[in-house]
Image 1 (cartoon, rainbow, N blue to C red):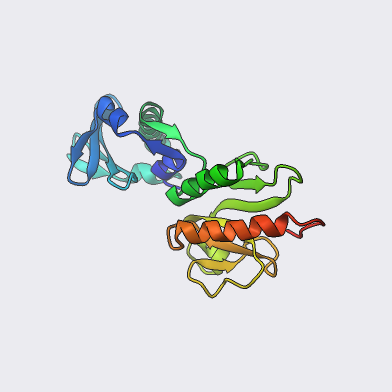
Image 2: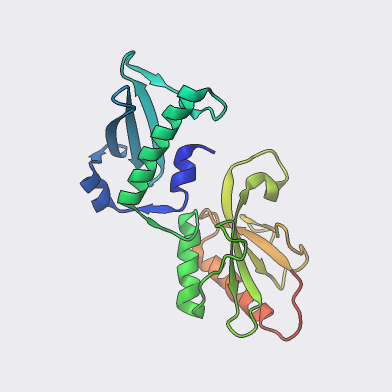
Length: 224
């Protein structure tokens, strides 16, 4: 995983804080130029208009881009450059960001809508951000599970991009709809996985959540 994705996956930027830190608005978003490793390298960090982060290092002596630091299996010096770069990213995250529950913007919108309608916040039983569970207040049964998984785990292909999905109980087959699949890691007969990358509109997802909420609120044990 690239250091930018690792550090900023669960961060949300404040424009005011970016400006206060030293980021300058340009045609692609906001950028900041900072020396690291005692001035041997110039780090150029860009926060795009879509709030995605990219960065590069310039070897000051040669005035050339230095890419070796992206290899995790390089020697001691390259590892020290990578560590200095990651330290800079961590400082930016601390100064310019706030925490967010999930990786994708749609996941966080849906989580807020669930809280607004059902008064429920997710819990993270596995101790990290890989799975946030939404439960009924009384029975503690699940009615939703947001996970960050590889696309290949859902599609059974070789695409290792990470994305958020929400698993929901369904009373009928929705998998012919774009962005809705048989549930990852749960009973395909009773559960579906819905992409949280804006393929499916928020309104449709909230309808499916309402269906799942009703189905899992019935008496008896629900299969997961």
